Length: 620
Image 1 (cartoon, rainbow, N blue to C red):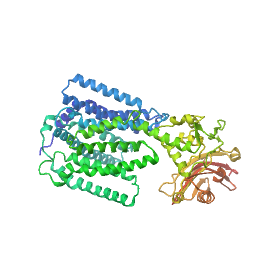
Image 2: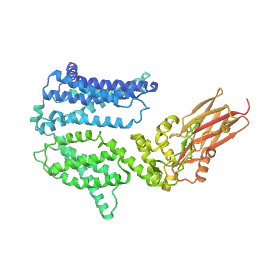
Image 3: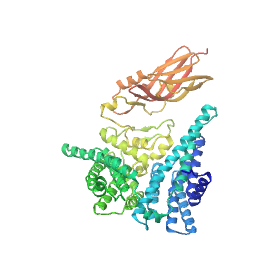
């Protein structure tokens, strides 16, 4: 076997660049900003613009691939290709300005979810655009087979190149004492995975689409993979799901939520196997024959179970973005199953229908974002209205004391506490947390006399925390399961620091410590009047060392005292600040610990935060 020469490899690389210039440029842009972030992330006040440029570069790869394929198939002139390139650039520019520009943006989650949807749609577009209006189904299958195999080959080559270069850097670092920064490994990964992998992939894209239409060769390895890997796995999963269905019918138990994901996984695996076995017409084995003719009849009862499981979750907890997506997938599976049961044979319907449905569900009043937000707001409104807490406006809404600059002071605090049951209290907590994460609280701002967003910004609190406190409820999640209360966390009530508590001390230090797998946390060093104090924590104690003084504050005893003397009803309990105070002194030094949080687990103290007050009793 003759190995390709260096000149041949250079010619192939140059040819790939000439055929797909914007694909490679777009990948290079993404890699450039990935490396820039690795080098400068700690120095940047705002990383979002650079993250967004990276993401736009990545999105450009499938979009420009789709343009190149379409122009090749349609045999359009170069001027038409340039116009499509310009259109893609405009799309990327719109995406860049749509993505969040900073952490100050009201919500950064939904734009990135929309971006992910657009990226998935772009990859689906590559799968069918060459055969949307031309070619045969056999050519469509062969084209996607070529994409799939080229992707695997690119991943193999890229992984080999990366591991080889990493070992070379490691050898330089350890054998020749060449200082290799850790960042070089990450940057090397981005270069190989971004530029090399993309370049190698597009170099092997099919160019003769007529030849794909006429290719009737079926890979033996693929036949073996379907017969002896995919089909046995599908059979096993269906056996599990049908057995579980029998259990539900016999015991009349509601289906578990995990079954939703199992059914979707099995359905996708079965569809993959069916698509891979589509052109298998010679000496068709029984399992593949069943897969092509009977799979969707077997799938239909599972789709019914899928609707039942989703319906129960929606009835109990409303629609969220995740549940909307599962409903969308269930509808898609239903449509595909009906199409195949009625004799449909066009396999292009799979990527095209999924492409259309995910784009349609990403915007508009019917889209996942508007529907999920409206569902959760209605659910929250129903709970609060039924309880009498909401009547157009929040009743007994506490007033924010703007004069208190140290804390979030509200009066009267928690005026509506006790009206809701623990389960409904937790639902309010969960809904507000969900709205904060995905939608913001603009839809419920009209319920309040004060603006939760303004207060949250003024006092650096999360909006869901402020909103729940303005509703008159304590921002905690309550539990009735005693096993969840074995290790509650404690927080000092947010009443602000009393000036008398810190009177008589020389220094104040704010700290936050968390135990790792090691016995002690990483050592924290504090400059105390020219002396360096060491601060560490283990499973029971807080250790302070300065000069020749070693002081131990017993956190474990304090935690156990809090737990034994508190009516623990929530995983997060607020207690008076004075109960979370420790003080020790000797003839040289006096320290006072004002804890704001204290966590424990089965091994002991896990983390704590607060303020440390220090005073030298005398010079020595």
